[in-house]
Image (tube, rainbow, N blue to C red):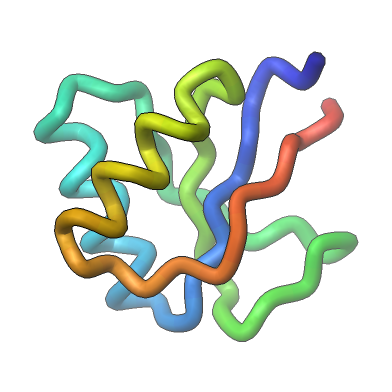
Length: 75
């Protein structure tokens, strides 16, 4: 299983908002450039621990963040 996952969003504003929501929930979220091989509507993404993917998705949807998808990041 991958150590990290990447949350892909539609806008940079969504990425910043997502990082803020997750950090307030004491999750290790980090704003990163979207990996080229994943392509996206936005140049920014949020890296999270892969084990927290479901929790992050729930928190972000509850907060009203528009996310595209969450993808495991194989490093």
